[in-house]
Image (cartoon, rainbow, N blue to C red; front, side):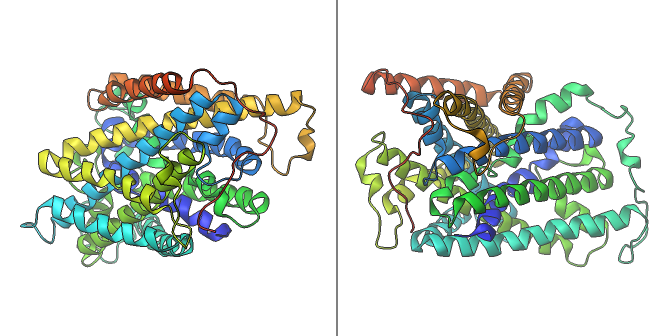
Length: 462
């Protein structure tokens, strides 16, 4: 895969239910201005994490590389835990994407159960991933094009409406510029705590940007492609996410958004776009499946990499003639099973819980990436390495990894204050403890290998 595939894989992984659906929850909790601030913080943390990731991805250009970073730089137990956390993040996220897609399909097929659509979508995405890495990259490229176009349309048309340009609207009362930001409760109607507790949901919305590191082992010329893709991804995410949230928050009163309808549908309907609800419903479903497509790719590569390190059943290393880890791919579809359960029990409430658990997992992985970069650079210099000779180096070391790690910790503290998301801690913390305990039980304490060298033994999808 080349830079354009890397950028769209990262964009595809990020732009999913976190923006198209759960952004409504963020606005309702944090208020209009608070939501914009929360997404700005999220974009800043993504930049910090990506800066660390860039240096690591070039040092260890292997498929499913996150746990390789931690294993080489911190220790095998941390690498093992990081891998399973990231697998958990995307396995759960796949379930949330399928559930959200099934909920949106109810608009057209109210008599068809949500779990039926979950099953259909799972089969489609499995087929995309089972053919070849190139086919996956190409399908994800066009998936991402569709939803990026929808976001640009929202920003342009919604922004024009805020300036009073509404040629398709039927009149009536519409907000002008940012008058919605001045709520009855002030700029922060739920207090600054409302902003604080939504940061995890925002981090979940940005999860997927790190997929560039997962795909590093299947990329041509990583030293050139990865930094270019990362810079492009961060800039586009900042424009698309913050721009879209600002338009949504300025258009829809914060008391009228939630998880029952995508705020994108609400905005396009408000500005009078013909058949807006149906068009956006289709686009959003495509966007959700795109994110699930990237998630399934990531899950399979992580299991393959775990098996390659001897920390998962060796069967996960088996590749098809096209280089696809088919067994690992099949096991990773367990997220789809979770979506079937949630769609039967209580789709909306369980969806939010899935988002929270996935958010906890991705934040923990980001913490691992930043800590790995901190220890990697320190060991590199201690072993006589020349920092100026690196093809890419994160700026302002050690400030960048330390600041990113600290902000991630703060976000985890924040979810303890939100009863809708605190379940992520109840599930996530024991999961981390169990991973460490299992590793030490099976393998004992092992010291990390040299951090200055290149890691990994194989790649997939070549």
